[in-house]
Amino acid sequence: MRSLSADVVVIGGGLGGVAAALSVLRAGKSVILTEQYAWLGGQLTSQAVTLDEHTWIEQFGCSTSYRELRDGIRRYYREHYPLSERARSQRYLNPGAGLVSRLCSEPRAGVAVIDALLAPHISSGRLTLLQPALPVAAEVDGDRVTSIDVETQDGRIRLNGRYVLDATETGELLPLTGTEYVIGAESRHETGEANAPETADPQNVQAISWCFVVDHVEGDHTIPRPDDYDMWREFAPDFWGAPMMSLTAPHPRTLELVTREFTPTIDDDPFARIADQREDGGDHELWTFRRILSRKMLAPGFLDSDIVLVNWPMIDYIGGSIIDNPDAEHHLDAAKRQSRAMLYWLQTEAPRPDGGRGWPGLRLRGDVTGTEDGFAQAPYIRESRRIRAEYTVVEQDLSVEARGNDRPATFPDTVGVGMYRIDLHPSTGGDNYIDVASVPFEIPLGALIPIRMQNLLPASKNVGTTHITNGAFRLHPVEWSIGEAAGWLAAFCLDRATDPRAVRHSPLLEEFQSLLAGNGVELHWPDVSGY
Image (tube, rainbow, N blue to C red):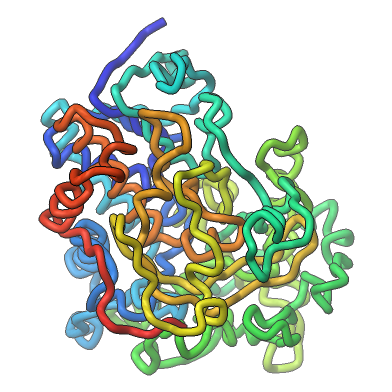
């Protein structure tokens, strides 16, 4: 078998994996980075989900390297798109003028920036990129991972590294290496969390969603009627209160039934509102909610239509988990079928302001997602396997109600910061939304250290959180921060001939935190309030 070696092996090229690789490379070490899909960037690119961030993101609450990513996306539009004069004058340009984030953009913009960030390191020879590649086996000697086997188009390759970082979307290395992990919902008895169920359920995870991108143009672009359309059209979970193929769904924060609007012909002012998650989720009008390119941001006539990401409650797939489940492939296929049925419903049955039904001008934009079928390359995965960690972040650490205050959550072993509401989508166990006000939080190093393994680190959503607190850790900037910290930690341990556990439990912690701060990682929040 062909083999490759590097100081650090990073399996998974999502945002956490990219951030981890950059940290290791900037520390002067060599990296092998693998990715399953055609694009690096995970939820931002192959899953097509535009940035979802906290209120203060333009001022503070992220690292310098994450800001490089954001600034790069804006620069991409400034350099390559015919922006209108007003758009070009915006310091905080939001190309999509979406209301989920202050920076809504197309997946390819993220791909271009990530590729540019990594390009010098490929040229230097210190970064080896294997793509597409899937982890299929591991060799372990006691508490250490000695190698990871990946399957590529050229056959199986054995990867050797002194540290191995799991940045896969579902924590794929954890079972391969025998690392202790949790999946699904822990019991209330185990975690003490108010929103945890009475009984643990490993198959109860947040819904996945197979996203797609559309515009609205002249002509009839209706897809063929799906064979299983009637089934999806009638699907109405008891807790949902309405058919999922509709514009009516529970409000995530109140669970009150709300009917959204969907108006592809809307003539809005994209500069009139700024996304602010403190105020609301921004999803009352679905066309502008996750819009990723607004035609009014560009020269008149350049775009015939806005370009919009469909990542809405109606495509949340709750039929079953894709993790540690023999029916995983069935559930992946069903998730895409649900999304296809939703598209057909929008094209043929969605109510219009003129009293008619259906928007046949809705056109799938596979050229935007990089696929032939028009859907994202990969499903949007909200919940992963999670390591059993030295420290597990629980609801009591983050919840405004549980803490009795809205001040930032602090940890002596902080290695980064994050902020998002504890936001759980409907689950495969039949739970409705759980959406709880959260405080800004520091990311504890203990959540990145497995209870036993010595040289395997989590670098994505697979850190020491619970089913509940994963809802605050799963978004773009936090995933990036986790990967960034894991990468610097691996490099630091190599330089000091030590291990992550020793770093956390010795004076080396302060030295490591100084290294992070010196490289642009924010370790603390100013005096701001959660929401």
